[in-house]
Structure formats: structure tokens, C-alpha cells
Image 1 (cartoon, helix red, strand yellow):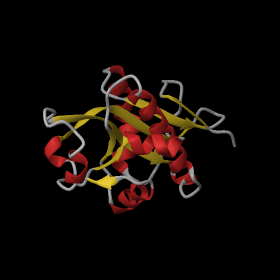
Image 2: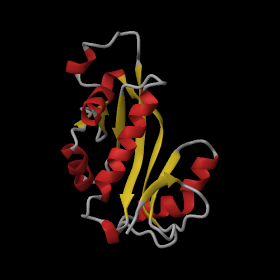
Image 3: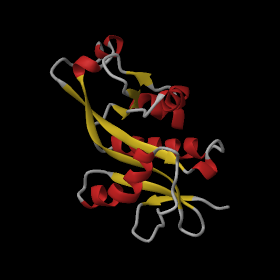
Length: 166
């Protein structure tokens, strides 16, 4: 089965998507298109040969409060920035029919590549995620995401992404 990652379009069938989390399923089916139309996020979908959505992720601009950043990394940054620019990987989900088959990793790597490309023309220090549960946190942890000490959010520095992609 051939899969491709594309920007969300109306023609892609989202109706059968079920990742096991109502929050993520409902977002794709009811909200994603509106957020894209309002320029609040970009939504990328994993589609099969029949244009059926089998996975998705969203990206949007964000920031990390300087006070939330780990001390050891703050030493290298000028103190004049109260907020550090970042990209939010807001949602990432795979349909149950494909879970455990490596498609989550494919979407994550695709998202990280896009974030790195963005960083080459727009200042951004990291990619932020807000894992939905411990299972998701463990997933991101395997790829080097670091827990922010003041929240349940995690981040991966752009410099680390560059090393992963090279």
C-alpha cells in the first residue's frame, strides 16, 4: 500500500479516521480544516492510494518562555529574550489500522524535516510537543525530546534535529 504525506485538502476522506483518542479524531474531522483556513495551523495528512486519511500532524508558530527552558541550555542564549521562538507540533495521530507499523515515526520525521526547513528561513530554537498521555510522552522521549521542567510539554532543539537529519 502506497502512502504519501500531503497538506490537508477537502478531497481527502477523514470520515473513517480513528486513532483511539476522541480528542484527536474529532479535531481532524471537525476542526482541522477550519484552523487551516484561519491560518492557525498547517495540517499534514498521511493518505493511502484512495485518498483516505490514515494519519496526520499539525504545525504552528509558538514560543517557549525563557523561564521554562532548562538552565543548562539557557547559558548559551542572550538574556534579552523572554520568549524563545519555536514550532508547535500540536497533534500527531495514526489510524488504529496502522498503529505499531512505523507510521508514527514516518510522520514525526516528516514533521521534523519541515520544522528544520522552516528554521533555515525563520528563527526558531526548538520543536515543542504536548503529549496527550504517558504513551505519547514515551514515544517522543525515544526521539530525544526533553521534558520542560515547568510543564508536561517536551521540546527538541533545532540543532538536535539538524544532527538527526544529517
